[in-house]
Image 1 (cartoon, rainbow, N blue to C red):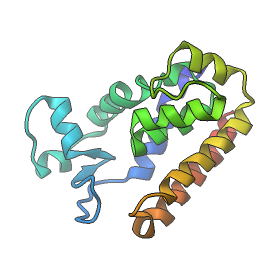
Image 2 (image 1 turned 135 degrees about the vertical axis):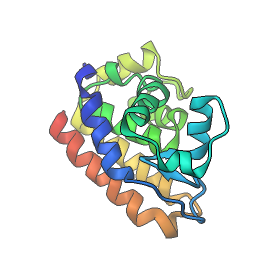
Image 3 (image 1 turned 180 degrees about the vertical axis):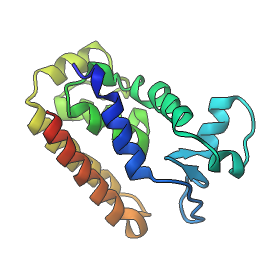
Image 4 (image 1 turned 90 degrees about the horizontal axis):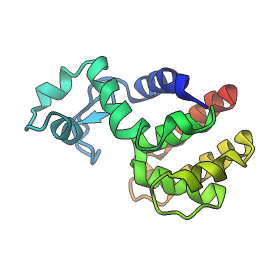
Amino acid sequence: MAAANFDVCLEFVFKEEGGYVDDPLDPGGATNLGITLNVLSEWRHTAVTKADVQNLGKDEAGAIYRAKYWNVVRGDDLPAGVDLMVFDAAVNLGAGRSARILQIAVGANPDGAIGPATLESTQGNDSTVLISKLTDARVAWYQSLSTFSRFGKGWTARVNRAKQLALQMA
């Protein structure tokens, strides 16, 4: 299993997400290390400002990623490499959509929650083949979005970088 992979996966996400941005055309709004203002506000149980987002540190961001994304998609229970693909998709698409993409790829019921049946189906798949399926499904999702013309090139490049690292991890 991939319990030791969280730090590697987190560093990938940090590198991909970068520092503070506030692109008015990005529906996420003010974001730092990939953590949006809304996510930080929910995490802290209080309203936060753009300055709070800008000052977010890696330790707190890492705790948010572990609790709200990695643990939700059961990263510790997924095969190496697959864990990165599912975690990074959860960060970018939401945990439920990431879970459904995995479930469809392994032939499990796509209910959006990774449980014992999904994990069992995942274990029965070749990780390298599954990583490719997850890559293709994620790119197809991005292509369906109205914002693909603005962000699609970057999204696709990110997924391909994730795939490269995931295949090395598998």
